[in-house]
Image (cartoon, rainbow, N blue to C red; front, side, top):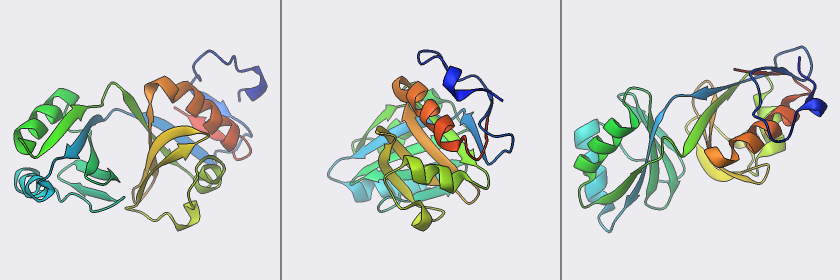
Length: 190
């Protein structure tokens, strides 16, 4: 168990256990390819191209839709984040550029952002301390672009866990806030 008071503020959070001895929250970084998609004036054409090319229906609103190993997360009007662990960032970008054509702008976010998967019996209790949304009402398949400890994040819920996308430049601050928020339940960070 690591002592939170002795964590140097300018060093990365080391994998390990934080807080009480129990494991109420587990956190691990995922190796995902990430591409942002912003539709042009023909969002219907984009949706049809992705449905045809990937078998993926773009969500209407802040939701999660998954098909064929690729997740689409609605992040705003005409904006989505695509995430997958079956393709590299370059491969996903190339595929999306070919499908989106003139319907959308696409940009690889794989190196700019990191996604953490949070799970465990006290993950909701921890997130209630961090995010500015009603976690009690946040059902599987929902997504939100919000703040966690005043850090901009994109949060979505799968059937088994919560996933949080954070800019790499804020990763250190996010992990420290997560460790402090989960300490009373015990955090296993891998």
